[in-house]
Amino acid sequence: MPVETLADLIPSADQSAPAVVIPQGGPKLSYGEFNSEVERVSGLLAAAGVEQGRAVSIVLPNGLDFMTLFMAVARTGAIAAPLNSAYTVDEFKFYMEDADAQLAIVPPGDHAGRDAAVALGIPVIDARLNGAELVLESGGAELTESKEVAPPKPGDVALFLHTSGTTSRPKGVPLTHENLVTSLKNISETYDLTASDVAMIVMPLFHVHGLIGVALSTFYTGGSVVIPPRFSASSFWPVQAETDATWYSAVPTIHQVLLLRADDDGAPHKSFRFIRSCSSALAPSVFHSLEERFGAPVLEAYGMTEASHQMSSSPLPPGDRKPGTVGKPTGVEVAIMDMEGKGDLLSVGSTGEVVIKGRNVMHGYNNNPDANDEAFVNGWFRTGDQGVMDESGYLTLTGRIKELINRGGEKISPLEVDAVLLKHDAVAEAVCFAVPDEKYGEVVQAAVVLNGNTDEAAIRQFCGEHLADFKVPDVVYIADSLPRTATGKIQRRHVSSAFAGDGS
Image 1 (cartoon, rainbow, N blue to C red):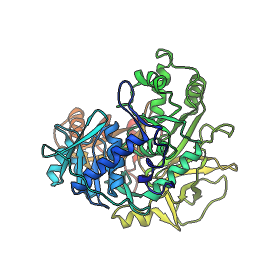
Image 2 (tube, rainbow, N blue to C red; image 1 turned 120 degrees about the horizontal axis):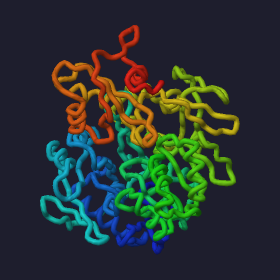
Image 3 (cartoon, helix red, strand yellow; image 1 turned 90 degrees about the horizontal axis):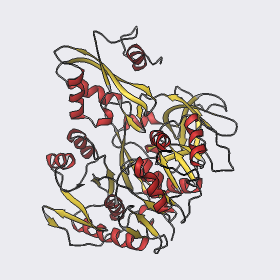
Image 4 (cartoon, rainbow, N blue to C red; image 1 turned 30 degrees about the horizontal axis):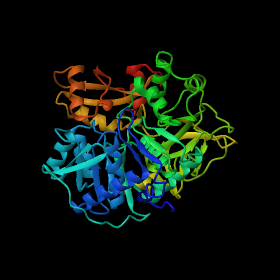
C-alpha cells in the first residue's frame, strides 16, 4: 500500500518482519504485532477523548513505550508533540501551552512534566509497559474502553516541535504528514534503505535526528529499529553484535566517544554498512578516523526541524565523500541567496545564506507571522546558515547568521538563556554566547554585571532551576561592564572574544 501518512508506515510493511527490537533481553515485535498494538492504543486514546488536530505532549524516554505512543497518536489524527524528559517545570509549561496540548502522557511517579500539566489544567495519562504491552492509566484507573477513529489525511499536522530562534523563546514548528513522508522518502533513497536494514537508535526520539532521521525512515522501508534505553558507549558494540545493526546516526560527540573507547571496547574493524553524522559539524579528522577504525563509509548530513530534518547528505559509495562539506541536496532544492534576504540567488562559488524549497519544508511557524515574514522569501525558506556550493553541487557551511548555540546537536537560543539570567535578583546585565569546544562543538558561557551579592556558583544553580542542564552556562564571568559597539549594542561575538578569548 502507498505511504501517504505516518499511519500507513506500519501496515505497509511485511507484517512478519521484525519492526522494533529492545536489545539485551527486551521485547521484540514484528510489524504485525506492532501494528496491532498501535491500533489498540490509538483506540484507547480516542475513547479517552483525544481529538484529531490537537497536540498530545509525550514525555517519555527512548523505548518501546515512546515508539508505540508516538505511532498511536499519529494514527488517531492528533498531533504528536514529544518533549525532552530533562526539561524543568517552567520549560514544560511553555512548550505544552505553546502547543495548546490537550493531553500530557508521562511515566508513572513524580515528574516535572506531570507537575507542569497539572499546573496548566491539562489532563494527564500515565504510560508504562507490561512486557510488550502498553498500559495507560488515568486517575489511577486503567484505560480499557476503545473507540474507532478515522485515519489522518496527508495535509493534517502530524508533529509539533520547537526550534530555538533568535527570539527569546523557541518557535513552534508544525509538520504535516506530507512534510514527514516526503522527508522519509528522501532519506531512505539517499541511503538505499531496505527491509534488510537494522538501524540502531542512539539519538533522543524527541529530536528530529533520532525520530525522523532514523526511526521513521527505517519504518518507511520496512527495516528494523533497535532502541536501547539510552546511548551507552560500553554496551554499544555488544548491542550491534546482538542485533546485526547495519547503520546508526549520531552527533559528532557520540562518534568521538566511540572512537576514544574503540580499542578498549574491542570495537570491530569492519562494522556497519554506513555511519551517518548530523546535527553538528563533523571535523575532517574525525571523519577519517571513523572510516579507518570502523571500516564503514561516513556520510555527513545537514538537517533542521523546519525541513522535517534532512536537506543534504554525502552520497554512499561509489559517490564522492568530501570531508568538511554536508554533501549534496537530497530531494530538496537548495540554493545560496544574498545575505540581505532580498531574494537574489547567487552563482556557484559565492558565499551567502542557504535557502531551501520542497514538500518537506514546513508551511510556517505556529502563530508567528513576523517570524514567517522573515523566514520565507520568494517561496524559499531561509535557514539562517551561511554557505557556498561548488560546481559539483556539494554544500559547505561557512558560518551561522542566526545566533544559535549548537551544543552537541542541541540548538539553544541565547536570548532564552539571557532571559533566565536576568531573572536573578542580583543580575543587572547578562549575555550568553557560544564557545568552541572539542567534545560538543560549542558550549554555553555567559557574562553578567551584578547589582547585588551573588557568585558564579549561585547563578549557575539558579539557571539549573529554570533551564535544562545542557542550556546552563558552563562558565559565568562576573564583569564590571559588557563590551558594546559604538551604538551601544552588545554583540555576542565581541563578548565571547573578550571573556573566553576564542578569537572570534
